[in-house]
Length: 78
Image (tube, rainbow, N blue to C red; front, side, top):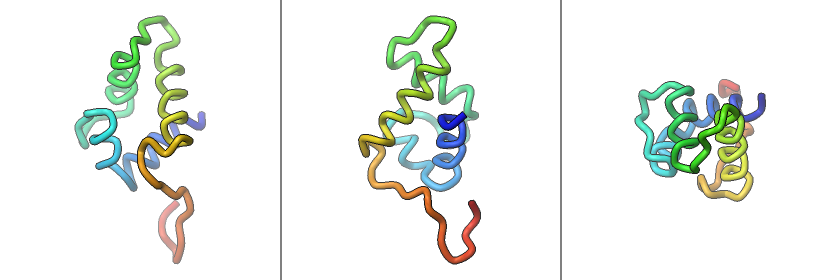
């Protein structure tokens, strides 16, 4: 899932952006972060995780997390 990939990428390369935007701890796991995003957005149905990942992707696409590149250069880890 693209949302899961993005969350993993942001946790690794831009953890401060996640903390700032969503009020999550840097040590939180994906499930905790997704639950917080879902709760904050009022998603309480069984598909709340999927909606939370969609919200994360929307925030990324609309630059609400700031300017972030998914490209890695000069042998940086992917």
